Length: 130
Image (cartoon, rainbow, N blue to C red):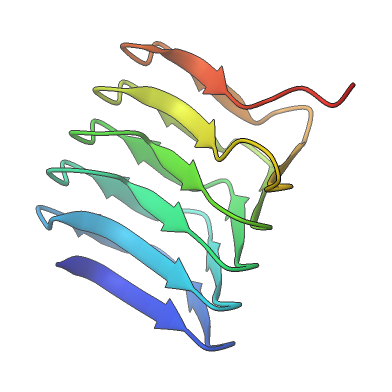
């Protein structure tokens, strides 16, 4: 079970909240959109911290995705993560960010201060554009 589920173009704007101890922290489907803002931490979930599929968007605006049992972020299909401010993705038990392979076109838009580090399998596992 997800701590926060957004789907079919629904929107969540989260401030100063701890999303923890769920199956996955946040799950987005079908154009879901979440903004994880300052003071928000997605942590200690048994699987993925934040998963996005079907053209969904994750805005990580100084939020933290840490210490989850799977990947910090899973990007599927045409989903996007955009990091701003002092965003952190760290110490997850698998990858920091992972993306589906072709024909998916997931994207990472990384601000200068978005940090992805110290994840067990590595930090970013996404195909490179030729």
